[in-house]
Length: 198
Image (cartoon, rainbow, N blue to C red):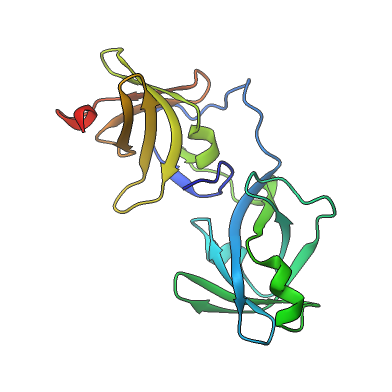
């Protein structure tokens, strides 16, 4: 996953107190328009949220932005006119976009919502962007590196952590992650034998 402002949540343990030094983004990415589909103005949208049904619905308004979660210069509000499931996402048509020609320029763009409009996080849940850049250490205090990426995989998310010893993929699971302290910018892990040698 390469979106620092994606709205997916990851379950964790430990403190979820906000870091006073980290600036929360104003908008979170909730999806990406991949390409036009057919000739009637539909586009294939991949949701980038763990609650797509709550966001992608008839009449919902969504903003256009970029991969960094920034609004376009003249951010346009898209209103969902029709929606239907398709593969791992949706086929969506927008109000005032009647045909393929009208939606062609939307391909590749990201869909954003104001952060405050999304449901609040539960205890021990985090948005992806909150984990990026956090320092990862073992329970013994050995530094592993910093989180560069969060991958949405089954059965659990993976943290890509880069340190002096290289890149490690660490499952974001309660059996491994002992604590996430956003205020201190720290993730404490208790890795099973061999995990950091992969």
